[in-house]
Amino acid sequence: MDTKKRHEHKNCRQLLGSLSEYVDGELDEELCGVLEQHLDGCEDCRIVVDTLRKTVYLYHESAKAEDIPSDIRKRLYKSLNIEDYLGK
Ligand SMILES: [Zn+2]
Image 1: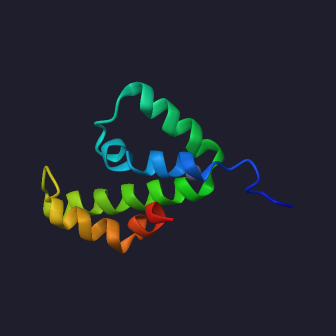
Image 2: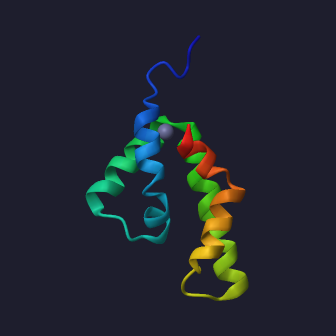
C-alpha cells in the first residue's frame, strides 16, 4: 500500500531546484527529459510544476512582463512552499 515506496525524494529536491529554469524554458534539453521522466511518475512534483506554470503564466498575462523580478519570484516560491519542500 506504500505508493511512495519507489519515490526518490532526493531526486525531487534536485529537480525542484531546476524548476524555475524549466518553467522559463531555459533548462537543458537533457535535463528537461530527466525532469519530465520524473514528473511522469511523481505526482508531488507534477503538482508543483503545474502550480508554478499557472502562476507564472497568470503573472505574465496580467503584467505583460518579460521577466519576473527575483523578489517576486522569491515570494512566489514562498507562497508555493517550495522552499519548505526543498528544506526537508
Ligand atoms: Zn518528485
